[in-house]
Length: 168
Length: 168
DNA sequence: CTAAATTTTCAGTATTTATTGAAAATTTAG
DNA sequence: CTAAATTTTCAATAAATACTGAAAATTTAG
Image (cartoon, rainbow over all chains, first blue to last red; front, top):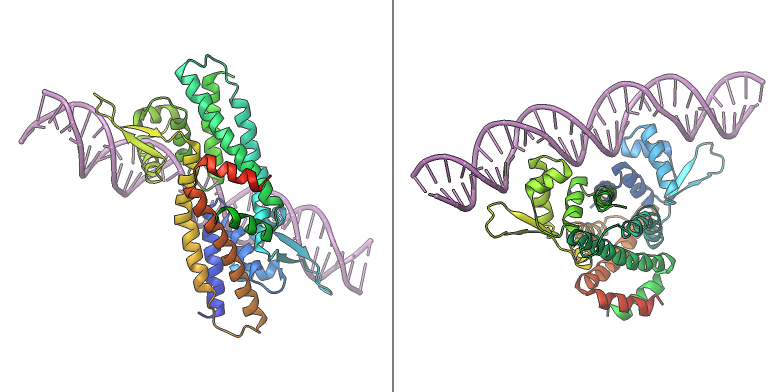
């Protein structure tokens, strides 16, 4: 396969993959494009390569910066802004896990804590089923939280070697 | 908080949570509803409780069955079909991980394997950046695959105690 | 300061995704 | 077998989400 074709396919697939995970297709494609670009790209470069409008490029680049997956870089002698993506995929994974945990898991756990204190007689089947379900979800969620916190802090080699020990 | 209100809030939140993960809101809500229902529910029960149409209920229940998160049950003396959700959340998590891995991670790894064999001179900066990026993603993806395979096979107590050992 | 370059915003529009509801198909009781 | 009950399908429609493009705001070179 030729490089140009391979790039195209990677960007398209990364975009499709993103949408399955609730991530805007264009945002995922911009990220993919920057991952495989040796040099920083300007908004114009991105607009051209993905055939998207300036507004769309601007909004999604901003979102990627907000997720700390993309950085603005200054290119000497250039007025425009340029952008790069973190190339270390392990760092990227940790950053995404960190953000999603903060934005989604933590609020969910907070809600579950509130819902566990529902009024009513525990001998009532309706009440019992509800509180049991919530307590179970809360417990598994709490475990996930601990595991993810550790993963966020871990460096790759440490993580791998630890996993190797358990997951022989 | 009263039970009815707590139920409402749980169903609504589970639905919102689902959409953030690329899961249809109604599908997540039906799942939530079944998780907290002591008895099996019919399509009519679900339609009524969520204020949705028969077609919508039918399609999303089918999808949940396809994900093996919901089961049809026969209620003695009833002609209608009834539905229940697996209540063991650890099992639910494993099942979701299993399905998403099969549907998403495995095809992605397959694609990465193909993209790694791009034509061209490795001394070309463009080629090198691309192949390096793909190889890195492939490597982290392969680790994820192994870890998830083990998680899918693990039972909860084993998983927790193993994690406790590592993630002191 | 002035004006050109660049970035940001956002109302309007397009696209994608989800839902309805009624007809068709299927199932089951008698 | 017959018809009532139930489930499934899917074209039409609604709702949610994403994108455009041009005007406004901001930045910077001179």
